[in-house]
Length: 346
Image (cartoon, rainbow, N blue to C red):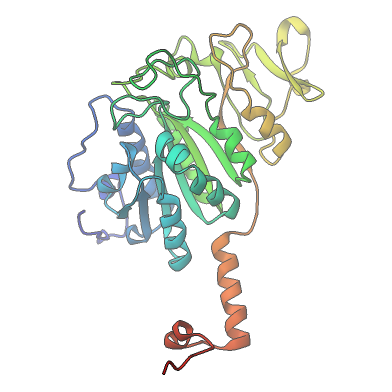
């Protein structure tokens, strides 16, 4: 990786975050868009370049640290969360970003993933979800829909797929958002929100693998279909969607129901108003996950689902160390290694 340098005028541009490495993703891969938006956003965050660090596991997405002119670690398959947690605990001054894929995070890294979320270290996690294993050439992944035909499931997958939103909220995530590679403006907004969050911010990014799972999410990004099949949530605003925003979501008890606003005579103010601090509603929103081919399906949500203020793991660790040092003082390393008891062997 190239040497991290600070511009003489103190002002960064996106080019300052572009490394000297050739980007080696397949032409047309959605990863290019994600990389570009991160590079576009970072100059606005007001952080010296040497304070950024990227940690990745294994997979197409995990090449990311090579392409950012920041510090980075290409770690072990599924273990990026443990490496990043340790880095943040020992260097709390760093802005640490984890880049992972649906296979890396939710299969071999699944255990590390859920425990990272409940511990809440101050990390920013970009979960690239293309519903396929791309690097190993097209096997089904933990997010592949049931019935998906791949090289490893030639007769169709029998597995129930993970829904990252449900999984994250169940694991006590303090920030969950969803965006997609084909909506760069929306992605930039979400990236900035994630950075501002104190704690683990998790962004699921729908990312197109144009070689092994092309068009998996196009229904949510194509001009003709995105407004009918997707819904963009904003704090304090009603849940409306449709070509002309003619549809809305209303709660009947705990059941979300689609209503035609004009035909029903229902006021927009009577619709579900998104509250990103309401975990109950965020959990219901996470379950807007039906196959878009299903008649009457709920639209797929994008935006910030949930935000919670909770002390971070690194802050708690720092307080614990200070408390113990105040009680016991700073113990020399050789005493720690030798312990309180010794034996003499004759």
